[in-house]
Image 1 (tube, one colour):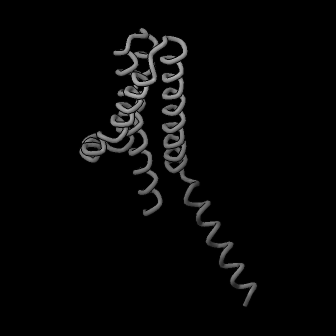
Image 2 (cartoon, helix red, strand yellow; image 1 turned 45 degrees about the vertical axis):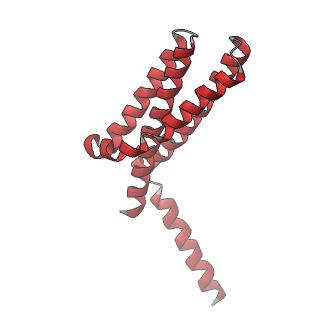
Length: 143
């Protein structure tokens, strides 16, 4: 009986591995992780650059970060519509485009508007990429 229970557990573990084998599942996991990774790096780099390199005060830096966090979550109100309209993969691509815009904006100058625009684009990009990839993941798990 004990052996049978152990065997059953092994079967269940194997099916979890099988769930993550399809290409789309790996894309979903990689996209969700890179969304977090890119977002954290740029957010950290921006606050360091603004404070240490350009001498902006911490109140200014925290305002930019707060607006960035807003940009991460405010799109949630219409991410569903965008997903329905564009589809999951295109929404993820849109998120990547926002990341590119964010990086370009960060490189074109060090004015407060550059940092603001960069981090708002970063937040929106994160939202689209992360929601798109988690939706892809959930559908891959349920089908």
